[in-house]
Image 1: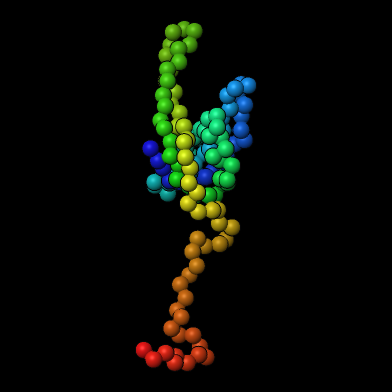
Image 2: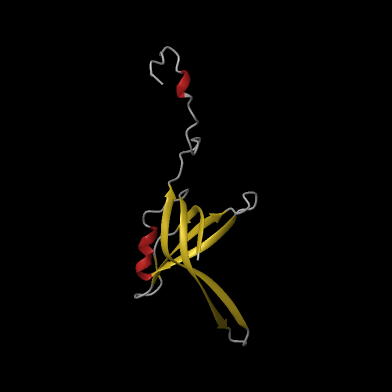
Length: 121
């Protein structure tokens, strides 16, 4: 599965045990820009380094697997958990400085003042 969105937050690497580490990435997914969703992804073990070049504000494409598992508490009640595990991430564009447009406005090069058009066509 994959999704495109804007990086909201990148967590530091968490060493859960001596042999298990993970890292979280929060992506703002704005299918409807009025109501953006904040989706948490995880990178596990050797994949934690995938987030090293990603920073808040970057537009990214995240490739992930959907995982689910049950957990039963002491009283016998079962709860279910879902995890989105990243296996690849592509940075589509970097964060824009505040106040900067994402694109340059168009320039009309056919009417530059003070220059004669001496092209033969």
